[in-house]
Length: 360
Ligand SMILES: [Zn+2]
Ligand SMILES: [Zn+2]
Image 1 (cartoon, rainbow, N blue to C red):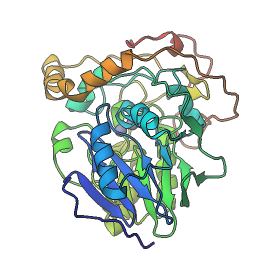
Image 2: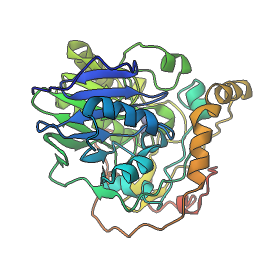
Image 3: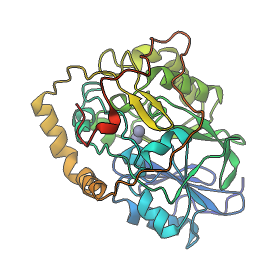
């Protein structure tokens, strides 16, 4: 692909080139991506935390002038990937594409399964009980990704369903030079440690432990991505990796997934959350996740004041519009060979639709 666009000469040090026509923007905790199409149009993949709009707008302008993107694509709807989506979709007046199983969390229908602060270790996990859990609500902009795997606005890419971290998580792949945008299906830094967040070390890890609610599906997804034989992988957290180093570490992750990626204890270690196209159906009971107070406080001081508070404020302003009903035959909670048993979908002890912002 011959891209006439700049790769290095804008001032913003948080912008990094990924591949021809693909740039990443590192906001505080999370990455988002700008991807251009052969005809010079472009799309945005994910939108960072709430409050990233100005920065995204500036970088977009330095890369593409005043051209609006064709679309916003979401790998999934966790708060650190959709924080600025509403503002940007409204401002640009563009559709936001997501997988059908992610829709309940983008249209106010369902909250995500609660994060599990007891797994992963480190401030990021300990403070995860503070993360916004209410679904955002952008029903006027949301569109479903085409079922044939094509990607709106990017004719040379296709999307791959990579559930596990979330039910409707997707990754994006460009076959011609095997560039992968993997969202949080796997990440390229240790996801939970604050030190790792600050460091530049690149290393393949499983999806963030405290926020992954179906480990069987998550493993299957990483395997699927390895089968694509990616040459470059850029993820939601950490810097891009490529070549043999990437493939070797991805292979190791698939091989050792149950010991290195899956937590040995915690809410979802042995049972997944069950979700369908209406949202969360059931979650395993909470485990004893007593958080050491000192560590929790450290996490709060380190990060809470930064963007999460702003997001929470924003989040509370959302109206509680019920989304339109969907009736599609999608479900990722199918039994997989060789993985721990799942819980029946009829488990009644925890109704996520009754939840407010506070999970047990
Ligand atoms: Zn996530
Ligand atoms: Zn993330």
